[in-house]
Structure formats: C-alpha cells, structure tokens
Figure: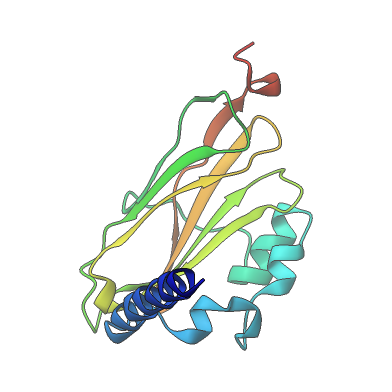
Length: 169
C-alpha cells in the first residue's frame, strides 16, 4: 500500500510541475483552462442553433470578407463525422502591435454551428491550430479571424462530405 501512495504522489508531482511550467510561459492561464469561469465566455454563441445567430453572438456580424491570409485545411471526404481533422493557419506577424487575437471555427448546419473559439497573444508566435471536430452531416466549414485592431477576415467556406455511418459508402 505504501508503494501505491508513493506512485500517486510522484504522478501528482510530475503533473503539477508540468502545469506550472506551461503556466509560467504565459500560454496557459487559469481563466483559459477553466473557460466556464471566464468573464466574457461566449456561452450564447456556443448555444446558438443557427449559423447567423452563432456568428452574430460571437463576432458581431454575419458577413466577413474572405482573405487569403486565413487558411483552412479539411478533407474533401470524411468517413467519420465524429473526428474530422481540421488545420487552421492565419498569416500574421504576431508582434505586440500586430497579431491575431481570436479565431472562430463554424460548421454551417451543425446542431451548434460554433465549433471552436481560440484566443491568441503575441507570445504564441503563430496563429496555428490543428484539431478534430464533430460534423453531423456533409456541410461547409469556415473560419473567421480577428486581429488585435478589430479587423475581421475569413476563409472561404470548405465543403466536407461526411459519409453515412463513417463506412465510406
């Protein structure tokens, strides 16, 4: 029984040290780790059931100009709608005076169209995201990015075909 307690202690210590190291870099802040407690968390936008509502509640408008600076990569066909790989990159110098502050990912007709929201600082060095999202059916995926100066820019919508039951047919 003593050995198990020692293992638990060591495991907890290693985890705490890792969290402290990441928090020390400024990339992880307590408010970001526990988003439900953050003032200004866009709960209304994440709860919206229609794309225009989700965009209006998160970015304040529904029409954003397409920019070549916003890159969205997603498969043309996804056999598993439960884990669709998406890569987002926004071309930005990421300096104290000019950086991407927020990126939103929308799936037009998902039950909740706002799939993700990411916040960046110049310390991030790059506005780059790789994630897997859930898609209910074949649909358009789109990204909107906001600079620290309030400028909004979007990717062109990208259609991802989700096959029935993830079986390829």
